[in-house]
Length: 104
Image (cartoon, rainbow, N blue to C red):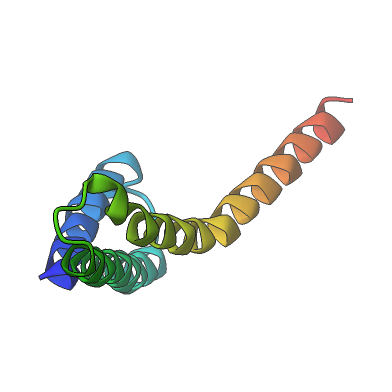
């Protein structure tokens, strides 16, 4: 169930990004489609498994037992986003440098 929820979220997220970047190439959408579906599905499944294990282990527990699974899912998602953010930042710096060189 967790994997299905994550891949469904990835589908909605990709449709949103399609509206933001309609001119992106087919390669972008293939990578986003498979990459984000697996990453979101995996992160959500890990959260679901850890949450269920923690809730079963700690009878009468509060929502705080969900924190380890949530933290791991956040770390995995962040790890997936870091290379993308660095590439976008590098491209923005190159574009700014090129614009500065042309304007001088």
